Length: 144
Image 1 (tube, rainbow, N blue to C red):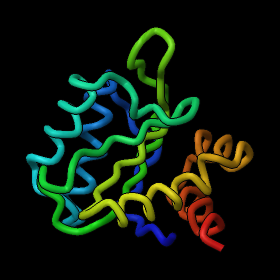
Image 2: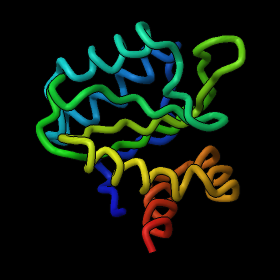
Image 3: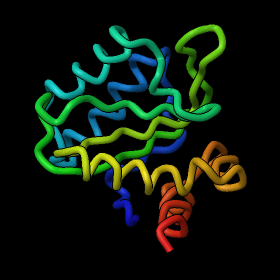
Image 4: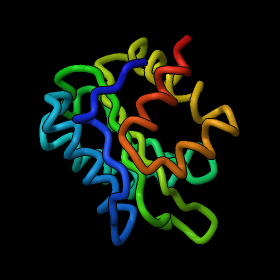
């Protein structure tokens, strides 16, 4: 999966998970993937359902439903300087925002993410990424 540099941020600082999710959502807004209300829905989903979006150690996958304001499918990646905590046993340093227009697209995006996050070596590199290019290369390799 090819990611444009516009949807990647590295070295971000966030005071808490909510701020990190909002930064992630802002990238999706700026890239034309979602309406502003989608970002609020991403935050509310965690408040309602808990930190289920932490899908791997150190990785969160904030998203909401298509009807919450998805304009076109896409993902964004934010790598924080320091992890933020969702709960005592769940924290994340990498936030991968997801915008899908339907279930099929949702699964395709998840598959692309899983190819990176599911590989312990790539995951370690992603958490330590310091440049946009490093993040791009990890996702490009994943979609061989």
